[in-house]
Image 1 (cartoon, rainbow, N blue to C red):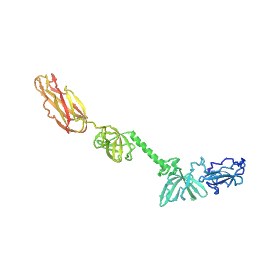
Image 2: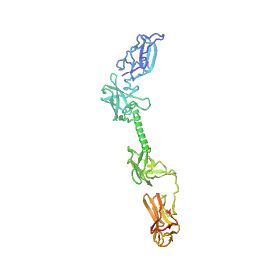
Image 3: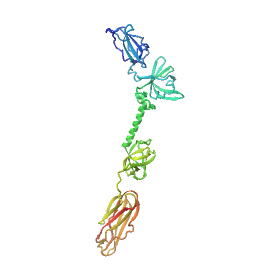
Image 4: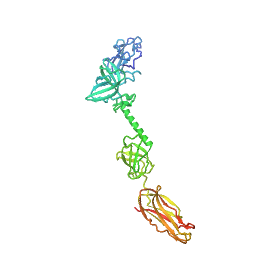
Length: 454
């Protein structure tokens, strides 16, 4: 299949005196030569060569269209009618493919190694040419007699010193008349043009990174990975698990644990101290975060905490991106004052360890119950969510008259107990009176003290 010449077609030539160059002659040489002739053709099939030289008609024009071998560079020279005097020449001419042939053939080809026929869709080459004939590459096959056909490589294998190339033919099978094979090229150094340069098809595989299709495949994989990672960071994933075991199951599942994958996470459960994080069942790794000094410490997780999590492949740990705030002095004692015998409570943070709880009064109380026997109770408590962690009671019993007595002895006073770090409710309950309650009772005040021992 020939390519149309970009010059001399439809051009009228004149001699040096301005007269129409009737009978002028066009000689066609190989590029860079004026002695080595190379044929041109009368039509796009490339099957009928022009007679050398081509004689201009009476209007000074070529008698027909000028078609060139697409694999050859030409030097085209116009001579006077004597065939001796050169008038005009253009060197380095290559053909231009027509719209009908542009998709079937490339404008740039290089001759490959000598092929041997193997099958209607297969040929072999001595040596290793896996890179040159990567799947998706375009090839041009020449048979005896100068006929050409085009194909796309679908598979290539190298074994025992021989490369076997399997192709998808554009039209017609490969025959035993195969004599040459051409490889399409890209001007960019080090890369071979393949079908991926024109129409990217993922099914080809493009396993060779030295081809345009291979580069496009790698880019597609990278884009898919980036989209997935961006999605992980922009979606709020909620963990499962209990205690210090945090499990994340994103969709789609993570395939590997990588340092550049960031997840935005809401933790279902709280944990203080040693904890692990496991994504898509790929392994439970320690969960840490940076403190205010830049050191890695156990992550402090509260229920429903939202934070971003990233994996550090060097230390094999997951990090909460949010660092701990600067250390705040932790109180070691709390006091509740009750001047009226009513309920009084506050939220407190206990840093763990052993604490002492005590309750006392500020003086003697009085009542006007006469000869009645009454019981006066007041208690102090440290509460977790809905549960009493510890409770102490001061009790006073009255028997007759206008009693002015201090609270009786509290057998629990000064109780020591251990707590886990966390927030609690420190509560001094209201006074309750049982027995004959006709009359008045005057409370002089009481207070509760919660203090850390160790």
